[in-house]
Image (cartoon, rainbow, N blue to C red; front, top):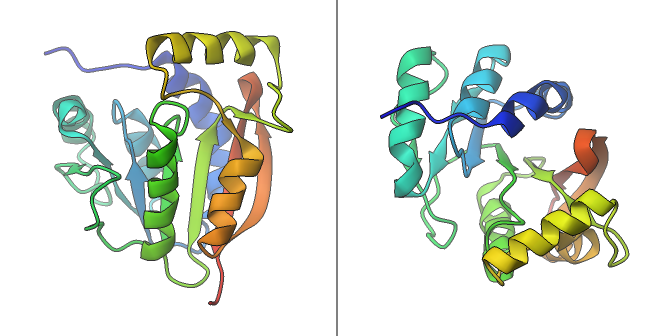
Amino acid sequence: MNKPFSEACERNKGPLLEVLRQEFADRTRVLEIGSGTGQHAVYFARHLPHLTWQASDVALNLPGIAQWLHEAALPNLPAPALELDVDEADWPSADAVFTANTMHIVSWPRVQRLIEQAARLLPVDGVLAAYGPFNYGGKHTSESNARFDLMLRARDPESGIRDFEEVNAVATRNGLLLKKDYGMPANNRTLVWVRRQV
């Protein structure tokens, strides 16, 4: 089996690292939801050695992630990655949750479930960071995002670029306060929420 590789991960890992250096500076354990190929997990664990970076994904993606983790053999990157579905209630402990390019792939009910589960898991001041494309005011932020959204919905009607306002409303209802909305390359964003005292 050839090791999986994502060009998108290679392009966005540097800008994402700069955000995570700030937002995860005082964190200790990160749970990554939807690790995909495993590239992000290896890159961020290598460059953020103060963190234990726990990769996870659905069963289909675990063999590819295992290749990246085995090759890297980093002490702060536990192997194997966890089999984890956002619909499952049993998430491992963490004081930060990271997810990249998942919210436009999974269905809207599962986006809501991801946020609800993260909010339930995180301690007060815990951080949720989500990377990907988002709409604002019900509108695409670029023509390329509009085309991408059409492609996603043609492939799977339950997927598609989410509206920032709707995503943030779910987060707010679950005790997460938006801390920062970072503009990223290629018309993407990184949204960062902090768990409030309830």
